Amino acid sequence: MQTLLLSAREPGTPALAAELIKRGELVAIPTETVYGLGANGLDEAAVAKIFEAKGRPQDNPLILHICGPEQIELFCHHIPQKAYDLARTYWPGPLTMVLPARDSVPRRTTAGLDTVAVRCPDNAVTREIIRLSGVPIAAPSANLSGKPSTTTAEHVLHDHDGRIAAVVDGGPCRVGVESTIVDLTEDRPRLLRPGGITPEQLIAVLGDLVVDKAVTAQIDKDAVVKAPGMKYRHYAPAEPVVIVSGSREKAAAYIHRHFVPGDRVLCFQEELPLYEGCAPLAYGREADVNTLSAGLFAALRELDDPSIHQVYARCPVGGGVAYAVQNRLKKAAAFHIVDAEAEV
Ligand code: TXA
Ligand code: MG
Image (tube, rainbow, N blue to C red; front, side, top):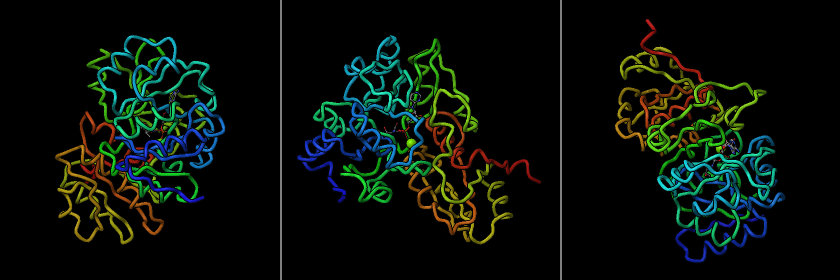
C-alpha cells in the first residue's frame, strides 16, 4: 500500500481524508497534542486495523474524537453536568473525558469496557475531517505501541509508511504530550493521565480531583486498573533512561561522575554548556515548560537508538504542564530516578 502524504493546507484534504475514513481505512491525523492513528470508531473492522498497525494490546481502549460537545450524547449516557462544564471551558482542547458508553459504540473500540473516552481536538482541519466523515474517529497516538508518541508527520511515516492509507501533515504538534484524561463515571472525578489541561485547571471547574495511582507509580501489568493504557511500558527508547533530579550543578556533577562513552544526556537548553563531551540533547527550555512538552517526544525518538548505552535525563519540577512532562519522562524511565542531592 502506498501511504498518501496529504497537506492540511490543501483545501481538498479534509474531503479526501474523510472519504478514506468512511471506506474503513487508517488515516493519521494531526491534533494539538500528538498525531493520532485514526479510523471509523463505529466500524469494528476498521478499529481492528488500528490495533494491528500499532501492535496494541487488545485490552487498551481507544479515544473517540468528536467535532463538538453536542456529539457527546450520541456516544455517552448518564452525562453529569460537570462534563458539560469541562467541555464548555476546555474544548476544543487537550482534554479527554471518560463517560458511560452507549450501545452505539462497539466494544472493540472500548476494549470491552462500558465506558468510552471522548475528546474534541483543537485542530480545525481534523475537526472538519471528523465532520465530513460523519462518524467519530477512534485514534490512539500514532506511534508503534510502547514507543514515544508521534508529534510530526515524519514520525508517523517512520512508524507506518506503506501500512496505512494516508497521513495528514499539519506540522509539529503544539502541546506535544497527549491529552489530559479525566474519568467522570464515579462520584469523584479522577485524573487518569496528566496533559495540556492541568490539574489546577480541572479543579477550577470541578472543585475536586482524585489522582489515580497509575499517574504516579509503575502499575503491574496484570493489575485491574481504571486506565488500562497506563500499566504498559511507554514512551521508551531502546536503552534504559534514568532521571537525575536535583540542582543544575549537583546533577551535572553526578552525571559527569557516572558518564561513560555510549551514554547520552537529555537536558534543558540552558544546561547544554554543562554537558560538553557528554553528547547532550536539549528538548526545550527549562524557563518555558511548553517548549519541553512540545519537544519531549521528538527527543526521545532521536534517542531511540540501540547503539546508545544509557540516557541521563533532566526533568522539570512543579505543577501545571510540568506535571505532564514529569509523568511521561518517569514512564520512559520506568520510574528510575536518582537524587543528585543525596549522593555524596
Ligand atoms: O492526545 C491524545 O489523547 C491522543 C490524540 C491522538 O488525541 N490520543 C491518545 O490515545 O493519546 P492513546 O490511545 O495513545 O491513549 C489513550 C489512553 C490510553 O491510556 C487508554 O487506556 C485510555 O486513554 N482510555 C481510553 N478509553 C478509556 C476508558 N474508557 N477508560 C479508561 N481509560 C481509557
Ligand atoms: Mg499512546
